[in-house]
Length: 116
Image 1: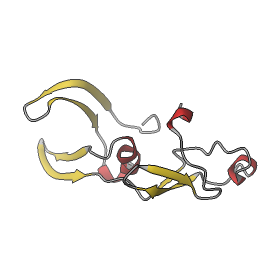
Image 2: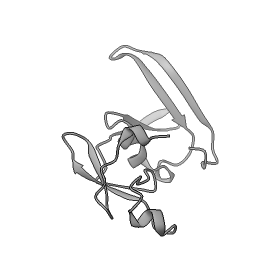
Image 3: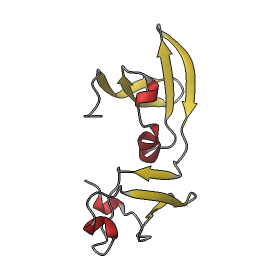
Image 4: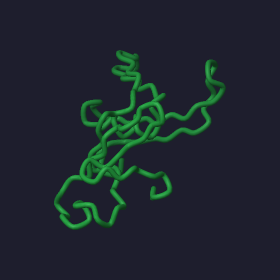
């Protein structure tokens, strides 16, 4: 989000008739410039509404991406990505049911405790 050159607004705890409360992320740019896989990784139950001229023209339901590039970092000190700085950090979806991602190079499991 910090790399986008457009207006971004975050609305937390907005009232929703269907869900009670919801968070809204408003990004004023072309939908094709956004990496929706990152949003799907954060929460694959997100619905993306594409709005043009004040009207919803498309709704996209997100699913867990099969592959994530340069979002997560492998924390295995023996992984090739720890040595070769130019390599992209690629994680693949190893178990969709348990939402487990693994490093493409060393098969290290991504752990949320390493976030941040």
